[in-house]
Image (cartoon, rainbow, N blue to C red; front, side, top):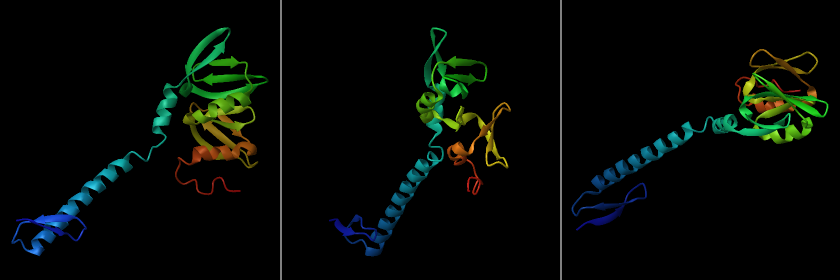
Length: 180
């Protein structure tokens, strides 16, 4: 007849009649070790997908389409293609790598709508797409230069300097860059 004993790991172990306690204990330890290994392997797999939590958001940005009204027509553009948005009075110039569109909308409204999708305000009249930023460099005036893919550089004023932290958290070695 089998007897039920409690192993060291806290698991119940069924042992055949006449089996020594040391044998039962070794089997329970090996079973517990196998469970721990399986659990750890599952955690490692889960951790491998954690380093890039914004990757799905960036992929979604590339596929997110926005409707804009241009010269009486409605166009659909991919938000991931927008490089920058520049204010021009009560209008904004929506710039892509290949073309641009002038829209009758204040930049504050555009910034509010597109902010959650990776367009960052760096100046009272400029928004940039975080995906196109190559680097930043400090100026002696307390402002920054923001380099975009393709060589274009925008000035980041001191008022909007705090918004650069959304970019810098992805970079390594920027410790005291934003202090002061």
